[in-house]
Image (cartoon, rainbow, N blue to C red; front, side):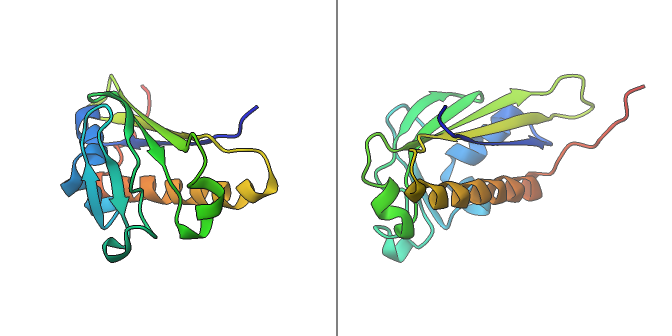
Length: 158
């Protein structure tokens, strides 16, 4: 069975707002990256740069959106940083990220669940370090999104 990375967060916003945070360049730079060039359409770019002056070394240049359903689903190819270049950036297919957005009902204010799955990890010891890196990194990205948007208030069930 292929190993995957899975993270989940609950946000105090609509699925539309959460989706926009992953597809609008001006919002991506608030919690995820230093520069974004995302074309929110099937086959569009999903290019993020953490060092805009050195994009070939620290970006997702060349990554594309592989699935998109507004406010519900976003999927894209993914590249790793330079230190993992030899392991994960020259394989086909690249690793792959799927993010789904689900409206929470019976909430006093808009709220949604965001699920992120990062797949495409190959067997072998050389893949262990990049997978562990992204296990941490995706947790940090989603925590930053929760910090930006907020989590819904917890209401005990009556």
